[in-house]
Amino acid sequence: MFTQAKTPPPAREWYYTATPEARQEYDAFGPWVRAVGSENEMPPRFRAAWTEISDARFVFKLPIRADRRDVRPGMDLYDMVLAVDDTGLTVLRIIGEGIDRRYIAWAEAVGLSFFTDLLDGRWSLLLSDGTRLDANYNTVSAHHFTALGTFIRQKLSPDDTPKEPSSMSASAPIKDLFYRNQARTVRTGGGGAARVLHFEPRDRLCRDDANRRRLSSGLLVLDAGDALVIVDRGVPARGLFHPTYAARQLFLPYQRLTGFSFTPAEAGGRRFAHLVLEAGGQTVPLACLDRLDDIIAHLSARGVSSRQP
View 1 (spheres, helix red, strand yellow):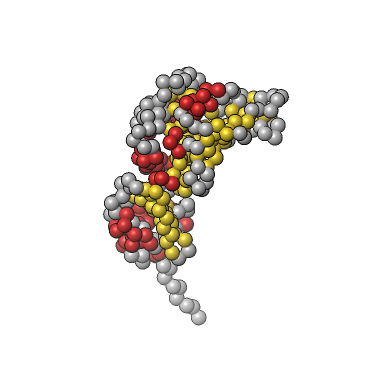
View 2 (cartoon, helix red, strand yellow; view 1 turned 120 degrees about the horizontal axis):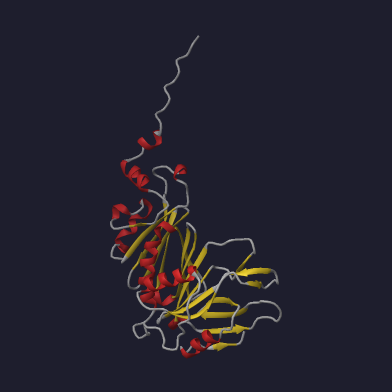
């Protein structure tokens, strides 16, 4: 006895049986951060919060980290919403079955960091209690965070903070294409000049703190008038045969710096000296191969206190 074969379901039945609204969100989904300009553009789980953030200067929704082939209409495709205005930042996250809401006033923030490694990006707001707010993104969306960073830098520096670099700032040439390009983006994104305080080229033979042979990653420190800007590769050194594509830009407004300490390099070989910057509960270590008299003199002139390491 033969049974009639069942008609196979149509391809992508899960797509055509979803609601039009769910299909529209799915069609627009990708690894990019998207600006939100209306309640309908908010992810469904966050839509109830639109009334309180609708007047924000920036509203961004950040996608989940998933391949498109693994998602379906109706899923939570965005797990974070950032809303930024003149008074502070609101972050909404999906936690379990609920939405966690956190508000951060600008008085609580002491710095801003951008870290990229090829397509992986991480934007971080450093807070005075020693914690940080991180937002991971695909670097195709870097323009959103560049605009956001320019806006936040203005909020972290009071109106009476000098906006032009100090006349005592150095102006040494940057003899490295990577760091020259990084300095150009700092100046473009910050909307003003930035003078070189300290520069160390990369790929110099050195020893790390465990006395292993390494190549230095280089370091660039800029005076942007209202902030100290640190540009590096995220780590001070790398293995001899391990390339790196990472880049970090760290903005520390002078008004938020509370102190610094310095530990000279240990004797023997090309070892790193360590400068630690303090901003409230945040500590920012810098590993340097060259003398740091220029940075130390500049920090002292800015009124940043020196502390014993």
